[in-house]
Length: 359
Image 1 (cartoon, rainbow, N blue to C red):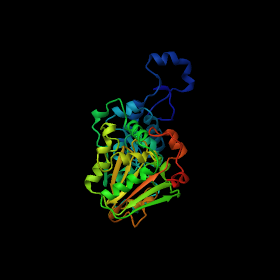
Image 2 (image 1 turned 180 degrees about the vertical axis):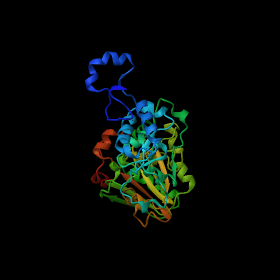
Image 3 (image 1 turned 90 degrees about the vertical axis):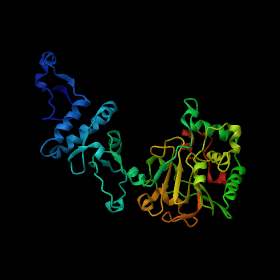
Image 4 (image 1 turned 120 degrees about the vertical axis):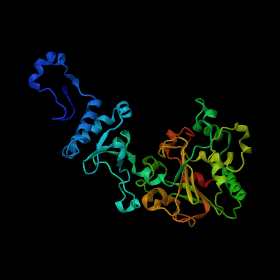
């Protein structure tokens, strides 16, 4: 028993009646605590789960207890099993549940996969804290590769982050038309016969994205297209953005060396489509969930229909994001004023489409 509880958890947890408050000193001696802790709430959920109804008669209480526990990361991390209600109200181990952070999708858009969803009153933030799976990440995970930029951890140690290294690179590499020339040279090295630039002022949707923070990069962008598809070695080379080589030697790193790093003058989240894959980079590890970068196979998948806002910006120059794209299309979304203020790579004024036109 305890003197207070933020939720009415009777008959599972008992609080002292106000009428007995005058006996507070005695009750403390007898073991009554001031308040319950996260461990008590977890034990309560376990008892409810083992009941004949699996907790289905106390759904609101179960939701409240899960929310209380979610704020105690230490307790959650030490729990072998934490129970939470599924969409029908039955308590299950939280690790068996999926929170729906892709609520724009109907069940028919899940590609025939079966998921056990958390109760609708469990928010995505709470679900993440208590170890549930993210529907967005699960939909992408079967077709993704994480990108680590090819940098051995010991080269950076604790002294220099990849964002700081990129900041150093763009400080020594000038802005201006030379960046465009470098992109043309990369295309020529790949055997391309056509290179096109496209300036888009369009603002795309911000709901059906891989992660909510990517909404900052759905606006005006510079596109660079060429008609040569990436080879596997090209993917490897480009994944070495911000690599640990000495800065004075970066010009010798070959295709996608110093020149490509210079696009971080414009953006914090460069991306491209080539062959069967779409690739997004996020050196801040801020916008793409769980990584500095991601490569996703899109051909013969439902990704465009599952994440229409995220992938619609790449449907240009004959790319339908459903079948293999025999070319390469880079997209460089410009920093907004808000993104520029938060950037660790460049805190210069945000780029505008008019500014890019001067190139």
